[in-house]
Amino acid sequence: MPIFLQNSTIDIYLQGNFLRVVPVWSFQKTRKIKRVDLSENLLTAIEMGAFEGLVELTDLNLGSNRLTSKSLPENIFQGLVSLQKLDTSTNYFYDNYPYFQSEISKVRSLVKLQIDLDRRHQIDKSLCNLLKLQDLGIFAPFGQIFSDNLFQNLKCLKIENFITLRGEFSRT
Image (cartoon, rainbow, N blue to C red; front, side, top):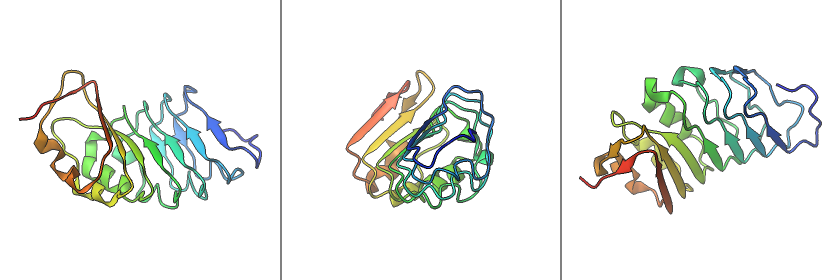
């Protein structure tokens, strides 16, 4: 992580830098950060406390990395009280999808969420905690067909925009 950040830094774009780990206190010098883009790296781990103190963070992009549920310590998103946009798409969270969804469900301020989903899993009821969620983007393997059953737990939410990317939605 960059060590040269100034206190006035608001946006951090680190996409495509071959980063492997987000260490603890990565952004401790810049508490006013609103956007962090860590997409398109080689991330396999996010250490507990990596996002500590980022109470003004509104947009976090972790998409297109090598993250698994084991990469995310419990309560990793705790304290991100202003987070509105979270992109975790194109990662490997299939190893423990219920745990992954339960961690996301703790971010009550989310308005926009992008996640992966395959036919072996479904949207967990824990996401009903995301009462402010309006936009949901689902990334899936090309040609995957979704059924209504896959999304039955979304009835608790008032999603305004639902997008599937690479997969197809089928009413079966």
